Image (cartoon, rainbow, N blue to C red; front, side, top):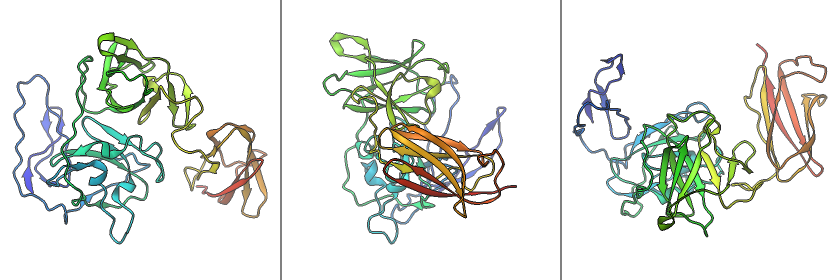
Length: 373
């Protein structure tokens, strides 16, 4: 560990002082533009032993916190393997099981939803991590407070992404991952993301599913993200109409990506059919959020097919308080808010309540708590 002068800048002045740095932590350093060549950053210190040196983690609220962590194992591994160390006293649970987003400078992958059984958009082992690399990760709700890098996986040769040659863009300090799935029978050589005629990210197409870093800094909020395909000798063409994945409904829908509509990630497919999903759909009643709550809460459910559905609220004595929804439900995920009022518009008292999802073949029940201040 070494003592470094890592500081924040406020109004042009250094406002912090020396900071104790370690290999288990990650740091983001931003340099001024147009002030001459950037000199190498030299760091002196002792090498940490990854077998006994933990990386401290913070979960944050609803997975919003990015942990910037440094990889300090003296061998290159697949990213999934690097996070693949078993948790203490576990025979099958790894640290990767508790991660839902991984971002590096030139690539990113994440789970489709923030759930423990959600699949990864791209297998983390498609990428490698080498000593000195830094990753930004977000965690699932019950993630441990610290982790250890795995050290026993066979060493690999670093896999780097080939840089596109047909599209030029400015790499910013951060990006939004856009996952693009192609028709295997229509693979371009490169793909570019254009907003108002300006390229905001591009990538070489090396498989039928890739991730492109989208840099949205100067994009206008309502502008469509136009996708261009480069076919070598055939030149550059506008991509055909694709299906955009809607994380709210969990379905692919006809439409286009727009800068104002992208959340943590975007996903467009030129292979999926409308109404299909990235995850297996089964009828499910989800836990309301927030819970406990005062004022309003959101109740969500998933249907495996289009069918009639009803959502009822009951008190602790089994008396029906109100019917929130009674109608035709669409395949995928739907949500509705409850304002803690009964069928007559009166606010309910503090306490435990139940909400029930009813379809023609089954019913599901969840518990929630109202807290009046």
